[in-house]
Image (cartoon, rainbow, N blue to C red; front, side):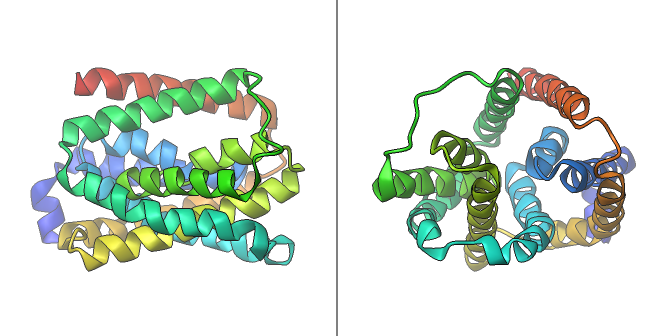
Length: 251
């Protein structure tokens, strides 16, 4: 832990723990957005590679539990194109993370946060993809893998795509959550195998685990007790502001 403490100011560590708690609380309460919430704060003081590694590591825990609860609803045949695409995309994203400048990656994540927030707030009517088929699913899997490997944000594209496919909400969740977890796992393995996960990142992971546990428990405890519509709207507005702040911070 000494390496982590020497590289980050005490305020940064406090913000890291607070953001980990907030992201896990949101994920427990709303079932989405752990990576988006965490990245919007972490990237102000952590390197993009550390941020991506921590998102996928914590995401495996948070989303892994959700996928376990969904296991009876999962249709493996529907997941296969996404999994194959993800396996092709993650190494590309991982190499982008390795070689792209930190400023460029922060800019990319900031843009993703802003786009995701605006899309979720206004829900524009996009062209239907009900007839896209397995080839379209596989192509989305590649893009999802690239984004996941480069930023850790593995669920955004898959979530939007499942909506465009016109599947019922429970079936959408039984696709995009397992797909996200698979990309998290592939990204962790790729980053670990290529030496991109250092001691500092492991130290931060251990520091953040208690906040992750408490935040997830708090979110699950309040599930169904808050006005879901207003909670999501306020959250998305805050994310939008955070994304804009990240863009301005990078510029």
